[in-house]
Length: 239
Figure (tube, rainbow, N blue to C red):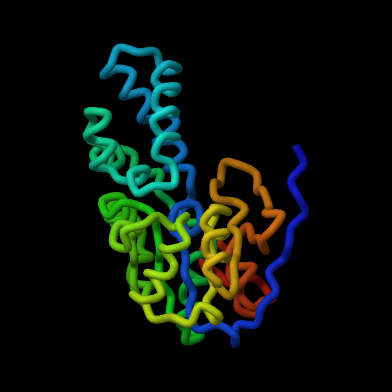
């Protein structure tokens, strides 16, 4: 299947005061989450309940769909209770797969040096957030970190963004949101978010798929003015 054509971002940094960034798939490689929920957890669930891995995958997929786009979907305590497994412990066992996308630290530093307020805004459960921040070094690069659990709604709900505005006191017309989920971007668009960016390569193991509706990027280097771009590993490109 052909990927849709890319809508390139086109905005003036001087028109922004605030940058809101999703975590999984946006800043962090979604391969960890895909592997955990689609392969690693079904394998353990199959052993616990005497099922084949294929049967476990089918059952878990049905359970996932029942709570998709709700806070339960990302609630590790919910899944531990539902499945009879210690989900945080299972995640910690494969935390070596947690990785930051290329250019993310450079982008976060650029935003801060440009005087922008930079906030991490994630649907992830606080326990998941703790595991991932412990494995990466990006936590100190944010002005504030907000979990949907703290807001009381998932980001796919337009009301989330109204509550978040009250919590962070930003001007929606001068705020940029980057996310790898179009449902989240649509909710933010309905709310009136000024600038929206779709992250088209959430997993390093899958090809990019550009949005038909929103400006898309593969890497955050695309949002850094060209003279300031750096390599994925932090070394400057040759002039």
